[in-house]
Image 1: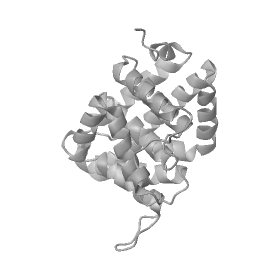
Image 2 (image 1 turned 45 degrees about the vertical axis):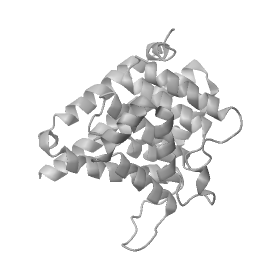
Image 3 (image 1 turned 45 degrees about the horizontal axis):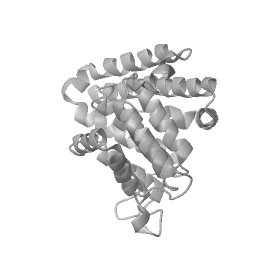
Image 4 (image 1 turned 90 degrees about the vertical axis):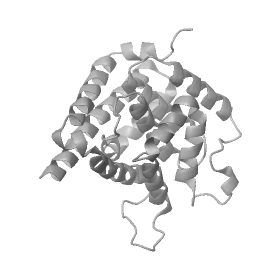
Length: 248
């Protein structure tokens, strides 16, 4: 069966952008601080990613004081960040590789708690518009694809944003799923990059690009993938700044 994601790598500019993202992330993993100290830099990256992702879903960046509930969107993003960090990360990556839909359900359970009244709805796709079928198709495609990892990460991110399968915290889930692809594929094995900062800073472009991706037009799809690759490259620079700060 043909790999439906492979042709995306041949869209104008995509392969070059994917190569730049891969090289930048490989370089930050070779940074002297990250040779042994990557758990510390990864933890800081997780917090920065959560705060930026929260903003993109309309939440806050202000970390709550001890004993205070804080913003529920940020709280969910931080829970997701914790699941993508430390000892929890290999577990979630393993679930993603075996059963992506279960991993997405887990991410929504973490991100959406506190945002819905019906707790039983957490982790369950909306029962409308063929959402469950489209999610299943996405899972089948990404697990079997041999396309470049940055391309797969961009498609997972874009499809989840466009589909909004859960109705709450979909952006946080989409960006976290993109990170999962990066880790599971070996693109960013220690989860050091912080592409969310770029998406937050370029929010208008981010929104326009996802609309173009959702249209299915090849040019729009290519632009979205290139934007995601550029954010991965910039996220590697953010990771370098974290490593440099911790080595000084």
